[in-house]
Amino acid sequence: MGRASDTAYATLRAEIVDGVLRSGSGLAEVELSTRLGISRTPVREALARLVADGLAEPLGGRGLVVSPLSADNVTELFELRQALEQQAAALAAERRDPAVFESLQRELREIGTDDLAAYYDLVARFDAAVDVAMRNPYLAQALAGVRTHLSRIRRLSRDNPARLRDAAREHLLIVDAIVDGDARLAADATRVHLYQSLKSTLSSLEGNHA
Image (tube, rainbow, N blue to C red; front, side, top):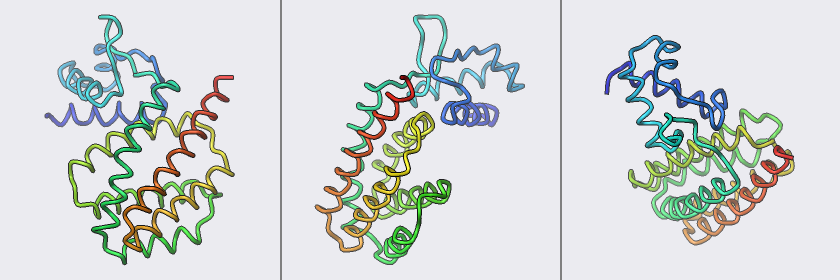
């Protein structure tokens, strides 16, 4: 894959995830080629990767558009997320370096949710630690794809301070279980966290469409 294609892919992917390119936005090769200052071939390659990611889709033979996000999409995504993240948490509890998660444990006990950037950074570092601890690159790759879509959902959802405080406590329970090496509790705590997250996300999306 050429450098121009990689650059185009990274740019368009970021624009979709960040909401610059919204659901249903057209992705025309000629227009994108002009805007990005590259030929149509690398643009076409980048678009093919976005389709493979599920971030773009055909529109009745009339080109590509940014994939929509709906309550059905979100529910389906969380069904996949539950299967993957419960297994990841269980494996992390069995295979972890306790010191890594003890450090995250201390941070979660102390962090507030007023600073959203700091909180989301901590959650991202927790996810990364789980990816390393579970020692399964195939599962890590599958989770990376899911998290791309979750980033889109987070942009569309309204931040709820009460929900963020609850989520921080739920993450702490997962980390506690991993530190203790309790695979079943880690999986169960993850299931509860995702159940509450799905409810909150659907409620937020409904509020945005009201």
